[in-house]
Image (tube, rainbow, N blue to C red; front, side, top):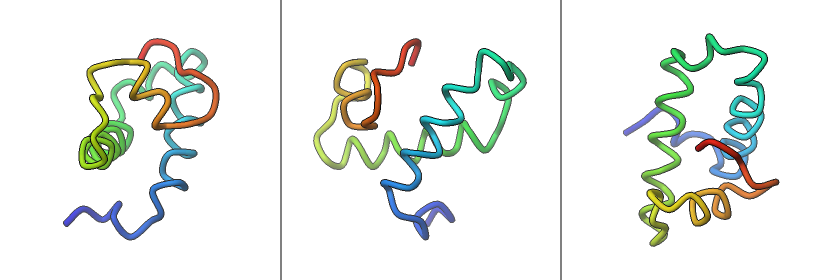
Length: 71
């Protein structure tokens, strides 16, 4: 079980959106293990709800917020 499962998925989505939006100003986040694990966990959650995470529009819609570019 992932440690991330202790947090609400909505809260994790918000954290992911904020971190992802910060990538242009903080490119070192691209190598962040935390961001990688957060994305993997959220993608697994999305897949369990029938979302095809390989389709940007479905993944972005599931994440909520404004459409994320470059995912």
